[in-house]
Image (tube, rainbow over all chains, first blue to last red; front, side, top):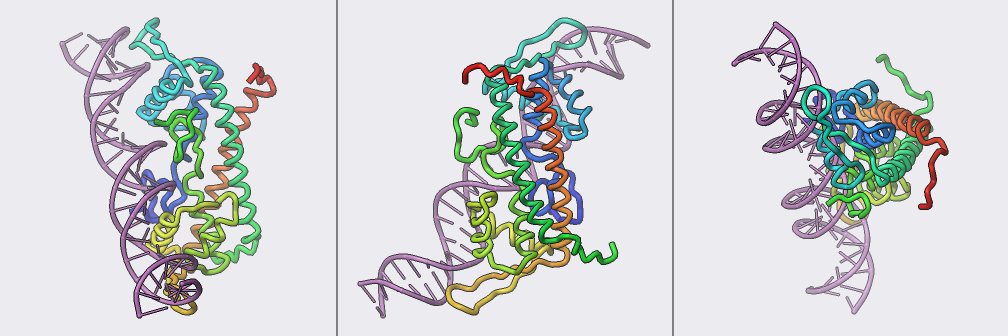
Amino acid sequence: MCHPHESHPHDQGCCTPPSGRMQGFIQPWLLLLLSERKAHGYQLTDKLNQNADTKGIDPGFLYRTLRHFEEEGLVKSSWDTEGSGPARRVYEITADGVEFLHTWAKHIRSTKEQLGRFLETYSARFKTSDSKKGR
Amino acid sequence: MCHPHESHPHDQGCCTPPSGRMQGFIQPWLLLLLSERKAHGYQLTDKLNQNADTKGIDPGFLYRTLRHFEEEGLVKSSWDTEGSGPARRVYEITADGVEFLHTWAKHIRSTKEQLGRFLETYSARFKTSDSKKGR
DNA sequence: TCATATATGTGTCTTATGCATATAATAAAC
DNA sequence: GTTTATTATATGCATAAGACACATATATGA
């Protein structure tokens, strides 16, 4: 299991470059979206699906994450029974949540820089001396 | 468990910005180092520890990863019984391993770009209008 | 009343990785 | 020459993220 040349559905890490999304990438997007306006899970799914980087989120994961955020005080929720269809749990970001989004953004910036440093070293090692053999 | 304001030793993902290293970050570094010269695990640990981004790797993880790479044909190993101390298992990257490193690098470049797109959206939302309230 | 769309969840499994611990051989100390 | 430290490799176990499948509930239209 987990062969580099087969592409298993949910190969993450291991010896394969993670084919899926990087870990902890959806969460800051959720907080960012909620910082724009309050929304319920289904709406958030729609918005995430409009962005290639966050497309195809698992609803189970989404709702669990939102509940988790609420436990942590990053968001708060209330039921919206207005309108048609089943009730929606509407999430709203808290001050703590906004603060936390800022912390998360700093982390993402630093991760991006780490990746940049890897790519620099990598490029220095393989600068055009790619010894392209066929392929 | 996993509260944003407590900093647990190995908080990864969840609702906290991952405090440790991002998933799948050490592996490409290992292949990159091995693409420069063959080495045994202990040497690789030393080299990783010289880089702030890869410092403090767990030996168990290192050796397991190397064995895994070997199963996948990305590296091959042989015992070095010369010199003092216990035998060292010396790892050498294969052609497949080099190719795979390139694939991995592409993935890292794309992840970096994803992070960039998040940060752009984030900055657009919070451009200096940080509404700094004390804190 | 039965199917369908909307909306929110739970159960469970795999995998990555950290931490603790085990093993083994040689070198150095006593 | 036996104990201790250093070098080196490896296994066992716990946890957490996330994917997948499935369960639940309400409203609407046929």
